[in-house]
Length: 203
Image (tube, rainbow, N blue to C red):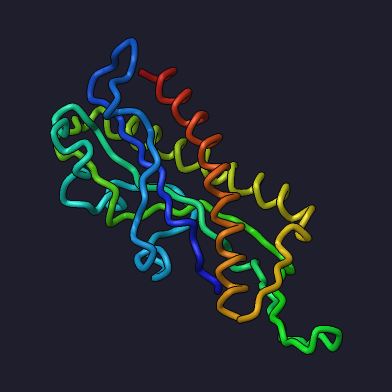
């Protein structure tokens, strides 16, 4: 099950010009992404960004009509880290004469990931603005990494909530995925507020 992600991505856009209140299209937002692309392991964990990390040929459809007003667009999400360990076992209940599957999480960790294929850099960014734009997107990435580490510490203190039982192994896996998905969806809403405040303060 390693590599599972909640299938949600946070999208950040930086405007070419400041304004007292960000328009709706420029606000950070959460979007559903294809689970197969997430499970394939594309993207990289936290590090210094460069212009070459923004490989999308165009901004996403949601903001394509406003591309001329946007400096850059980052696609960043949370995913389980390699330290995450699942434990699934098969058992038998003599009292009910019935077999069962049980699952739990022995250790868990989250990390921030940027997807270059969905991150776009406006070729019209003036040379003198390049450093500022990169720094702005870097801060978004850093805020996500901080959130990932905090979530790892908090969730790691109570792994018992991830214990599940089902009649099949697949059922156990689906329950574990659903628990993690629900957890991250709730966390994303908090993260979204942090990033929105950051963007509005910088506008």
